[in-house]
Image (tube, rainbow, N blue to C red):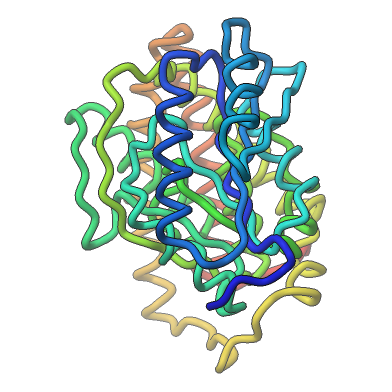
Length: 326
């Protein structure tokens, strides 16, 4: 690919109180893009309501480094910052990386190239796909795999890693999908990907080398609870038609090479059994998480309610192939 006059790539770095790491990370990212990319690019620091010296450092970097931009938001929320900057960006492809650069930047070219070529609509870095090399503790590994398995089971999607901080979208896709994403925090990524895949968009996955940040300030239990609420909300919106995935498919989706065939009776029996087993596992995991933030009886009730709804939806869609609101 050759450099063009229009802006090809906008790499957004969402930050909140990152005065210790911001300058070093932006300089590393800037040097990598300068050396490795012939396409036109810029870096946008999306400062979402930092209360330390992050804003001043971001502004100083825009003066020091060509191609660095800073946007300051008055409200906190990583999802809010990404949505705002991505929708306002003139770039052909919008991407984001976490400020700690946990993901090796050598995965950036294979992340954005399929989008620049028009081959794919969304691209994600995956810590769970074959070929990935990940360094992190056993607890986070278990939570990540359990969460992504729950997302795939309950939402009928196939992407492997919803929450790796390394993603990109074509601008036309972002303009259509992001206005439908309601979450402003950590569930933003999952909600965006669910809508994209359910609308028939092509999601390209890149195995990444990833090292856990030991200083991460993410509240794992609180985030998990918010994510479960988000899954229930998105599932309800899909079932009731509030998210118009059929309209997005008609505008941007890629027709399948062959129409899907309905499952056979044996296939229905097998799927019914698998969904039942996965629902039981999901109930156990939900209860284990929720009991830390609420009384045991309430945790049990909510876990049963969520998995019963998810089980019904999964059998309706996957076992019996029923679509639409009927």
